[in-house]
Each structure stands twice: as C-alpha cells, then as structure tokens.
Amino acid sequence: MILLAQNSITPLILAASLTAAAALAHFMCLVFGAPAFRLLGAGEPIARMAENGHWYPPVIAFVIGSVLTLWVAYALGAAGLIAPLPLTRYALWGIATFFLLRAVCFPLLIPAFPGNSMLFWWSTSVACLILGVAYLIGAWNFWTTH
Image 1 (spheres, rainbow, N blue to C red):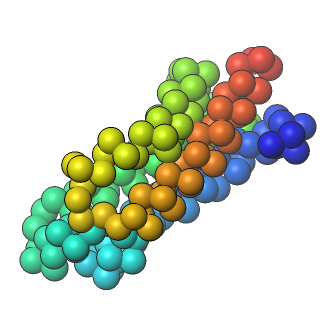
Image 2 (image 1 turned 120 degrees about the vertical axis):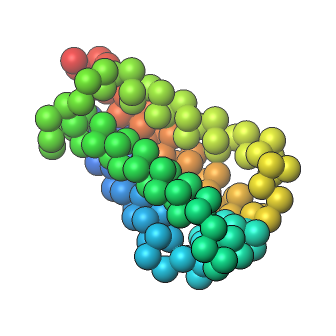
Image 3 (image 1 turned 60 degrees about the horizontal axis):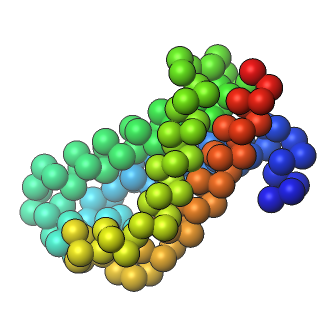
C-alpha cells in the first residue's frame, strides 16, 4: 500500500482498471448469458432465469456494469486522464465506502442471494476490499491536492 500512496494517481488508475474489468464481466453476461452468469458465480437461479429469457438477469447485469463504468470515469477524471466529473471528491469517498462495506458486510448479504457460491462471496469480497482501499487512497490524495 505504501507504493500506491507514493504516486497520487496510481491508486486511481488501479481502481479504474479493476473496476473496468468488473464492468466488462457484467457486460459479458449480456453477450454470453447463462454460461457467463455461472462462470461469475451468480448462482444457479440467476443462470436459469437467463436461460429462460427472463428480463431480470440482463437488466441487473446492465445496471451494475453501467454504474461500474461511471465509477471508472470518476477514477480516470480524478487521475487527470479525462475531464473530472461533477462532485468527484464526494463520489470517490462514496465509491470507496461502498466497496469497503461490500467487502466486510458480505455475510449479511448471503441470505438474500442463496444461490451464490462461497467462492463468489470470498473472491468478490477480496476484490471489493482491494478496490475500496484503492479508491480510499485515491480519494484522500485527490482531496488533499484539489
């Protein structure tokens, strides 16, 4: 983490890159359907809904992918690679908070999504922890320099 803090845009670029990968994974569910939902560990109920042409899985995948893409734009804007978006300071703190809460509160979410595998919960929680820390460092660096 000390390496990330040495260059103020490094954590934001890391956050943008990892968030873009997560967004792409969600958008791939729109293209590949049930096999992609299964690969990502979304659970058999969601995969079966996708196989049956239900509207819910692709809509949720699209919404999550879109939100993640917006968060990529906030990170890239704060890093100075694109024009900053409105309320960047607050958005970065909010994004960091979301990812950190998602990382540590996953046991509370498990009952709401019983079809998701434990591999899904642990892997996504670790990913969210890494993202949360990257956004947190990026938010701090952005806040103190702007």
